[in-house]
Each structure stands twice: as C-alpha cells, then as structure tokens.
Image 1 (cartoon, rainbow over the protein chains, first blue to last red):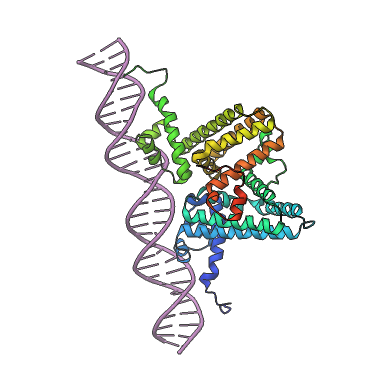
Image 2 (cartoon, chains in turn red, cyan, yellow, blue):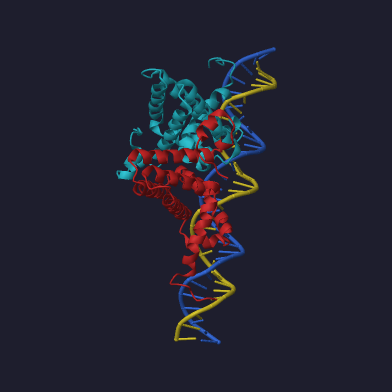
Length: 187
Length: 187
DNA sequence: CACAAGAGTGAGTGATCAATCACTCTCGAC
DNA sequence: GTCGAGAGTGATTGATCACTCACTCTTGTG
C-alpha cells in the first residue's frame, strides 16, 4: 500500500471519519438513545475500536458537534461570498439561504437540537456555546450587520429548527402555514 | 376518611399529581434519561404504581407535555388580560412578558426543548404539534395580530429557549450579549 | 362478619449498553 | 526472520431500566 501519506497515523486519519458517522447517528437518535454500537456500525468498525479512538461517548458527541458547527460556518461563509452584493442585508440573506440548503437533509439541524436537549451535560453545554459563539460572531463579522439584525437572523434560525424537528411544514392547517411562511423547507 | 369527594376514583385524582411530577422530572432529564423510578420518587409512590396509572413511559411524557402547554396557554391568556391596552402589539407584548415570568424556573421551557429532541417518537411529535397549534392559534386569536407579528413572537420565543438551555445569559462575551439583548432571563 | 374491589407495592425479569480486557493480526525496521 | 508497535476485534461485565406479576392492605357495603 502507499506509504503513510503524512505524519498522521491511520488512527488519526480515522477519527474524522468516525466523527462523521457520529454526526449522522447522533442526529438520528440524540445523545442518550444513540449507541456506540450504532456509530461503530455506521463507520464499519467494531464498538471496541470506537473507544480506542475516543475516550467516552460524551467526548465523541462533543467532537461530532464541533464538526457540525464547523460545517455550518463553512456554509455561511460560502453563502456570503455568493451574495448579490456585500451589503449587510444581502449578506445575511445569502447566509440564510445557504443555511437552508445545508440543513436540507436535517442531519446538522437535528444534531443541534439534540445538543440543546443534552446541554445539561457540562461538556456538551460548553461545546454548544462554543459553536454558537462561532456562528454568531461569524454572522456579525462577515455581514457587518447591526446587533438587532443578527439577533433576528439567529431567532429565525431557531424557528426553522422548530419547524423541521416537529415537521410543521407537513401540517396543512393555518397555524402551521403561519409559522412556516417564508421559511425554506427540506427536500 | 371523607367519602370519595366526587365521582373520581383516587387513581383518577392522582393522575394529574403524578403528571406534574413527570413534568418536573422530564424537564430535568429529558425523555430518554429520565427514569420512571425518578418520577415515582418525586410523586411519592412506587414505580409499579406509575404503570397502573399510565400505560407506558411514552404516554406519561405525552401527558406531561400536554399539561405543560396547557399552563403556557393559561399564562398567555392571563398576560393578555393584563395588557396596558388591547391593541395587537400591546397584547403580544404582554404575552411575551407573561411567558418570561412563566419560564423563570426553566421547567416548562426545558420540557418543550426535550420534546423537540424526542419528536421522532410519533406520539411525542404529535403532542408537540398539538401544543404548538394551541399556543400559536391562541396567540393569533387573542391578540388579533397579523401573521408576521405572530411568527416573530414564536421565533423570539425559540431564541429565548436557546438562551436559557445553553445558559447564554451567563456568558459575558459580546456574541452572547447580542443574542440575549432585550430577552428577559430566568431568576 | 364476610367479601369484593380498588389502592398500592416488593421483588423480580429480560433486555440493553457503556466501557474494558485480553487477545490476534499486519507490517515496517533492523 | 524476528521483533515490536500499532490496528483492530470478540467476549464480557456490571449496571441500569422499562415493564410485569403476584401479592397485601384498606375500606365500604350487604
């Protein structure tokens, strides 16, 4: 086989791959009801090896959440670059559209919701705050919008999370259409 | 002892009491990591008797969530009655203040967040949609505000949930102050 | 008193799961 | 070729938990 293609051991190379599996599985089941065996299975390795790569389930969730927020910031950044013009309003708008695209498959959105629910676990709460700090600071710094506009951006992001997790966009009643108005839906 | 003080059996009388214990315990731990034993303990009965009163953990959670949303609507109603005037803006504003008061102790808010995380369980998802339908329809009907204002009301309620669950209001950094600006905090 | 019906529980049971351990296998360096 | 380090796993373990069952206790009624 090719020589070790860098200074990374194969274990170090595998970590992000397993983390990606963890993102998907934790997004499906949440922290408490997702098993290490499920993540291992998704990654094609044995459960025992997951614990060789990560010290605990908690830490694995934290790594998955960090990967999630990194992808979110990356998507916002790409969206901002593609804005029709670089005014604060246009950039925030483009970021919103990019986020809508990103969460089309629900995975990254669900993981954030599950993290919120598990935030009483100190390391998870801290990882959640770190992620939100990155997203909020990036949205403000990149767009140059004022505080109020950024707060509005995040608030409607949270509304979007509610709509998707509760599948409100599949409800035809008027209260549901009211909540979903102007929000892009998955699929 | 006094005669059966109505047509209700003592089991029927106990159900709402146990449901209130379930609200508190599920709010603390979420659906998956809260045990029936914890709820039973909080209610001062045996775990076995919880299953005499409710058929399953799932159903108990649903009943707790229904109780939660009933209290929310009740609080919004009382808040609306106390509005400085009955214009849509003033009524929505008063409802927001009443909601802030209601969730001061985090319990009802956390339960909603945990319900969102457990919404993949069909009965819980349905109960969540039912609760949101009641809250949204009530907010619109009672205030008479237009769709956009009601959507804004719910979106900022969700932002409030994020701030409280992640304890963002305890973070002194600027991104956190930006998100928390103008939102009332617990305690 | 007798007894029926409901209130309430103690002691399980079977399943599940995070975490561990003792192992085997591969492969590059000498 | 042999040695050692890292990759990777199967088999367990100890704990937890939803749910069940067989049982006792109480109380109101005839």
